[in-house]
Length: 95
Ligand SMILES: [Zn+2]
Image (cartoon, rainbow, N blue to C red; front, side, top):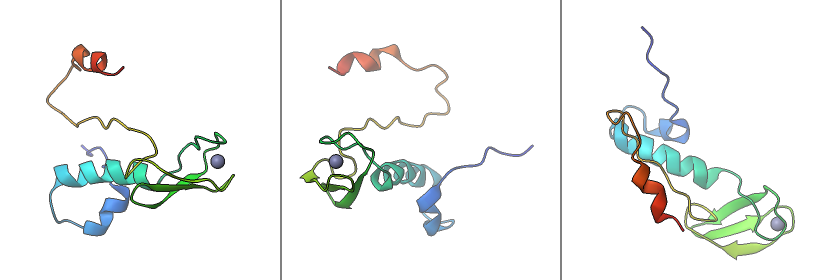
């Protein structure tokens, strides 16, 4: 039986080192960090990260600050293979 292919992306640079769990965590953060984000000024999906917390829109040229790895707060789901059902109490905190 073939195992499900793990999508590590940029974290493949580490090869077989450093462990599965921490690499998966980093893969999720880095895919957000290096991806395109929505511009808060012109609403185009053209914002790229210049450095930690500094973002630039390639459409309207706006340079602004945000989070270190994303423009806005991104909730990254913890990977829990043992947990079959998601706890419903989690959403109530966001407001
Ligand atoms: Zn823009």
